[in-house]
Length: 578
Ligand SMILES: C[S@@+](CC[C@H](N)C(=O)[O-])C[C@H]1O[C@@H](n2cnc3c(N)ncnc32)[C@H](O)[C@@H]1O
Image (cartoon, rainbow, N blue to C red; front, side, top):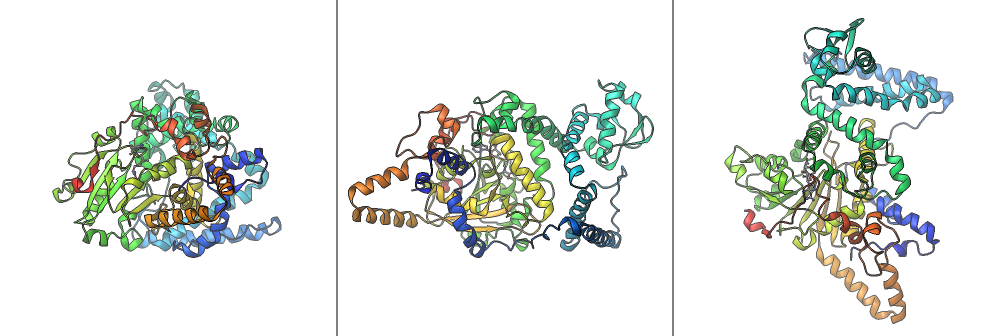
């Protein structure tokens, strides 16, 4: 049950191609299963219909008309956006230092126009550059990161007054950067609308550089990207060459960049450095506070969020695993007045949560914070919902399967497992803005953690790999939200049925054939996870593949904030949480 039946999938392949296939499957999904499921999923999963596919790419000969079509689209969409802003007395977008840093929440159709402008200007720009020049200069984008990262590191934005200007010489006196390097970095950033130079040698803020001066979470976001992700990205090729399967938490670009290969996962490194950990925490706050990620999308039923009315009527229990400081449970408890909530996270996170968790006692008394490591068996038994938000995408398949398996001993029939994460659509199905963000996030996950964003098929396979008892319910996505709601329900009778069928087949088959089949089904593919291979002898027949892969790093360094976390001392029953 729940074992990855690798060898049966490719028993006819040569051993080297089988190795390769096993590595691929361990990383992303089980491709043979994927292709057979893909068509069915589209028809049966109940997910919100994907947006209309973008127009097929035009051939070179029609690029002139495409350019004009894009220009018209940009004009129309811009006029629509501007009309809305004017009609509502909203300030027009501008680089001016006093311009608002964010758009207000726009009606759906106006937001769509805004997205069209962003996408069509990008496409038009690419066409106008032409293929060769686009590639030549596209690869230089890392220099934008370098300039912004240096400006942020030296805190230059905070040294520039918001209501006047400053000369480069004056600015230099306030930093250790000499005027020449200061000027070249600033002028590079100015090509992206960050700072301006109203007269030679005189620097002033734009709206964007002002954000950098005033928004601490944005400073952390730039710092985390520039000083942690950027060096890691520069080492991904090295990591992939050394460990092409790219599943281990201790062999990603991050470890190659910071000399921690086979020593510790990124979160453990951050756990030893409070400043770096704090910066990442703030960077995450910046990200998750951004457009399309607000927790309200999950709560707002009218907009496609999750409706817990039935559970509320029954006084049910919701467990937020890796729930940080419990903000999602606070939002839900504000809406649902009878449900109980358990927020589980690592000890350090639980210890730093606000106390009380809400100023409203009716909310606070229904929320329990509990130290629990999700790489150990679930301690809150018989809850109605086990919820993971921004968790699964931090882990490659072997780890993610282990996390799901750890739920099983606590699950009652009908228990729901709800994941709130990105869910990748087929290329061209996603709206272009979200597609860009999500594809980038997928590669960030590879860079730092050898982890990944997933498609619906891959989520389905994750549950299937954990146990046949998880019945996949599908994926849906609240309107305007970038995160999807992925759900499975625990139906243990399914496991029993599968086991009965297997037993009946065994009884009917000749003993020798059954023995051979069993060996084949349970023998893991070679080298499924390099961490396992390095730390333990190759697992033999009957060894659970994911277990072998996860074990060496699950204890205890896998803890995301780096704490060496002991499993919770005692089991917590739902009753205790009430
Ligand atoms: C990316 S954050 C997501 C937080 C929250 N769910 C949200 O939606 O913002 C991951 C969370 O998982 C917690 N975490 C990491 N490893 C963990 C583990 N082994 N057991 C429990 N929680 C863990 C972290 O402390 C952090 O709060």
